[in-house]
Length: 201
Image (cartoon, rainbow, N blue to C red; front, side, top):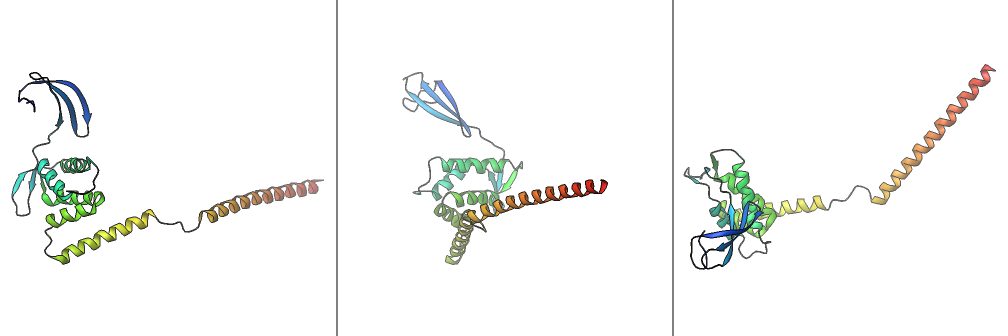
């Protein structure tokens, strides 16, 4: 590992820690003594993406990351969210267990995750990936986004059919009703026993 300070090509590892998707290592240059950190990530190779025109090329995490970063540029997105999104997409792509996947599959995975992460970044990425022809295409995408948001908000804020107080009162009445039925049944059973004893006597 080349030292970023003096360019010396040898260093020693002083600390290693697991991180999401790889290992973070703390290193010390054997020449100048400066310390620096490297991140090692497992590279899953051997996967080919098939473009819309039929061309094939090796799947590139770096290329995907660059595209998502451009879409998220100058957006208030939490640190590390873009990398986590790309890690998730890469994992899903390799989980297909296929040697080739269409770029449309990769693109839809990114779009689905950007929709939840940041709506502006989602529209930016979708406009390039889906190649909007005109304003009508953009309006349709915005309308679909607004509909999804409205459905999500409706589901999250859905009210019960009855107020909580009414539900509690209903439960209490049911408990009292069950208690009264048990008392009535016990009284009837006692009366039947008394009648039976009288008949025997």
